Amino acid sequence: MVAAVDAVAEKVVAQLREECATPATRLDGVATAMEEEMRAGLHQEGGSKIKMIISYVDNLPNGSEEGLFYALDLGGTNFRVLRVQLAGKDKRVVKRESREVSIPPHLMSGSAA
Image 1 (cartoon, rainbow, N blue to C red):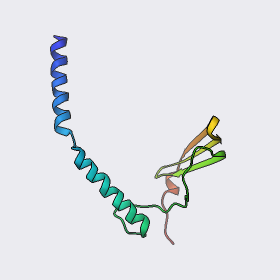
Image 2: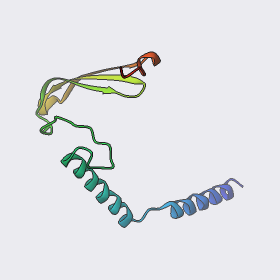
Image 3: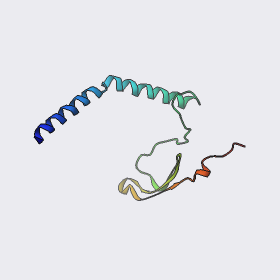
Image 4: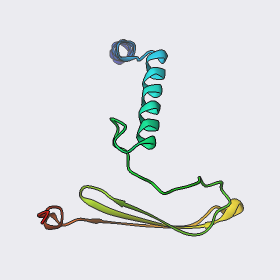
């Protein structure tokens, strides 16, 4: 009986997987469109349908970074802070600390005046 139920379940899952599959060509098209929109948004303010936030990062990390680094995330209801101590290529992340606090509702709205 259990084997029969398992066989039916596997058939249902296989059918769903087939019906929900996205062709690779379609995924490639989505990726290309996203890239074009992001490039347009980086080229000109308001030049994209994708919301682009200006970033002043002028180069990417290469793994040899050393020192204390912070990441701040101010979301809709939470404020997150991440502090990471990096020690270069050999040790990489030495210490990682994070905190998250809820933003009180009265601070989430106000007048523009």
